[in-house]
Image 1 (cartoon, one colour):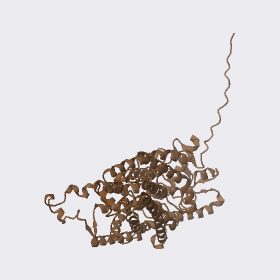
Image 2 (cartoon, one colour; image 1 turned 60 degrees about the vertical axis):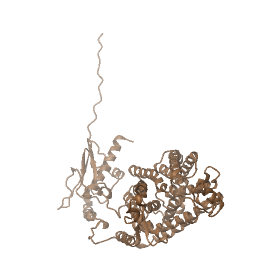
Image 3 (cartoon, rainbow, N blue to C red; image 1 turned 90 degrees about the horizontal axis):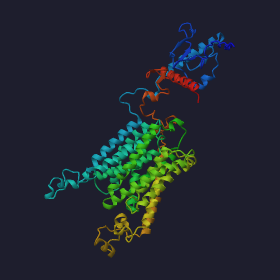
Length: 619
């Protein structure tokens, strides 16, 4: 049997049709995007026949998003000026009028902004003149009233004789003993504070640059202010003066974080000149008059700086409207801020450890590290719990770790015990993270406080918790417990009064100066009074300073200047222009950094290429 196989007739192939363009005038060829548009004849004003070209010759007057491009009707053509016109004969006069208007806009487009006009060499801005004037006054005051301390004066007899003949031993000079502490504190105030504030996408220059300016100004001004509260004829400067100045610089850096992006450099300079004397007086009140123990500065440095800055920001006007882009942070800026936070956490004990010695300093190093480790561990789960999507936040982790380090500074040299240091760091970290995520936004909305860097929580709240921990430690301290008679070294006001049998008994085997004879309960009450005093002084002085910053001569920021470097800093062209002057079309890269027309056109090509990629690959 013969079986005949018949081949099924296949349907005829579909007729080849021209590929419908993705957008009117846009064709995909391989990996490149070609834009077809019309050019006007320079003489007759008539359009040339459509031709394929890479870029239009004139800058666009406005931008169209990819969505607007997709909504254009097929009868429209892309002209290369950011517009869509209808090539119909009856509308040719209207098109010619629009072309003339676009040419005028193009001429305006090429004109430089008003702030970029070149100035003569002798021209000084208000900020520049004020900075030079202040530095000149510092030089005059240092010339008239500042002298070297005897340990740094080459003409002093102790430095002109051999130690056998009564001279000073070079190994006992504090310049050599405290050299590393001074370097570490400079790292904190110059690198740590500045990098920690550089998390805003468009405000990084001001964060780092203005921080350097304020630190340099604070160190000089703090040395003079400490001399003002003494009765000496001259200010004798030594390495201790520089260390105290660095402590004040930390407080000023905390205040700067509260006004980040809402105050001009001139306003921040004036605020620093007002804050340093108030901080010096507050530090003198807490340590010498109330005689509360605040070795690490949790109250007089961190809490004072945070509350002073937040109060000044509220009086200045609080957070005004700004674009979401300016308030956002990129991965790079967040990593830089995280590095700055870690620098501050690692070197923060150097801010105050030079004030202790022996077993007190040894114990302080142990307690500080244990509290920081516990704060770092608890910060991650606390951030996840506070986040609605149960994710980690880099800002939350920085807030928690910094809060634990600030809180333990007040009680680091006390008999906190290892478990107590861990508990204090963990509890402070969790409270700071949850407060920053849940409570702080509500308070900022109702009180109108900006607090851009969140220092009110990481330094203000954490400093207050450290002060409360000091109250508890003072209430439990006695010479019969875990301290012994060394309690009089940690809490000097609790030492017996002068010319008493108790002091004579203690001095017979342990050298301590005479104190106030306070009980543990009395010392705890004074610790609590110090917290309230710092809170009241910082709020009142901060509000008054913020009201003073409203003066029109201080270059108040406008809405366009908020959280932006463009008004006071020279920004690279690629970042300052509204459209990036570097994009890639197909496999080739075109750069026109000096031509705004090409920059805006490249931006449009990038939008079209992104739309084409989304249509080809899908969601």
